[in-house]
Amino acid sequence: MNDFIQKELDELAAAGLKRELKDFVPDGSALRGEFRGRRVVNFSSNSYLGLDSHPALKKAAIAALEKWPVGASASRLITGTGPWVKELEERTAAWKKREAALYFGSGYAANVGIIAALADRDTDIFLDKLDHASIVDGAILSRAKIHRYRHNDIADLERLLKRSTAARKLLVTDTIFSMDGDIAPLEDIVGLCRKYEALLIVDEAHASGVYGATGGGLMEERGLAGKAFLEMGTFSKGLGAAGAYVAGDRATIDYLINRARSFIFTTATPPMVCAACAAAIDIVRSDEGTRLRERLQRHIATLRTVVPAAATPIVPIVLGDIPATMARYETLLEKGLLGLPVRPPTVPEGTARLRLSLSAGHTTEEMAALVGALSTIN
Ligand SMILES: *Cc1c(COP(=O)(O)O)cnc(C)c1O
Image 1: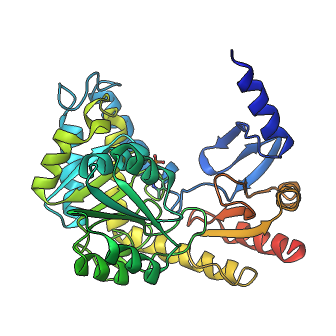
Image 2: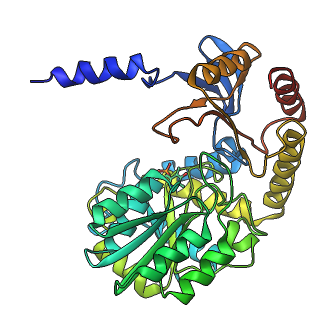
């Protein structure tokens, strides 16, 4: 009866696509640790500002742990709404300059819950071909009709929007794409959504904390703050903690509290995590946040000397061929540099790559080592 399991695993292994969990033991920070028996500098984390091990986040988490329970013990709508999460949501709304914000346990849960709540059978959803899996899953769960436009192709998007006769239209896009590190044409997308009366949700997972004068994300950076119907982002990457926010108008947030099933039917997040998220917001809004963003931009410029296309902290080195990708990965690893390979189905067929991600927490010496290694193997 369960023959299919071994068969499927064997097929994946034969195609070089079998995924395995890899042990990584950080030494204090996510950016360094032990991997396959070797000390490595980690160029595969999403800790773009190095906040994962920031003393202020740890201090806030420890204080909350001492004051409040370890677990929240109930869902938010039962008895899970403590002062720690109300405070976090108020701080998020103030930071994002929106009326209200809602916290979700993860970015995955946020996208699935928000999209499925806002779209129904009579909705047309427009997604970029490279939108994150959580966005696609939310769209599938909503039972709406899904239209996928070519990656960052505004003409293709307009062609699809023009044809739509649905009463409700929803467009969801990453602002920075997680595997390619490129940026969505946000001004054009905002314009098209206005023209065709589509609700726009932007996913700032990789841009939260990392872009904008107060770390609000790429919409802030591009002068488009408040121009999307909803702005979603995560606390798990640049902000170094865990969970996600969605920010928008009060009525829509109230609607999500009533309709987002991944918000309703799950136990609230531990207070210590919420406290760390709130501390992270304070840092990204401060001068320290500005300094960290500037330092990250300098690291990107350094990498550009060997990878000219490097535009954001996510830098793919697309090799296409899976064995070639694996060989590069091993060569880097021998030099103590961890840049994990990404293969289909995470990325489209024929676009296997090393995905490097840079952090303000990397040292100048570590950046020099990366540049040196890439210039000899590229
Ligand atoms: C990582 C990511 C998510 C999911 O966030 P988690 O907090 O890791 O669950 C959602 N959207 C995008 C674009 C992401 O890169």
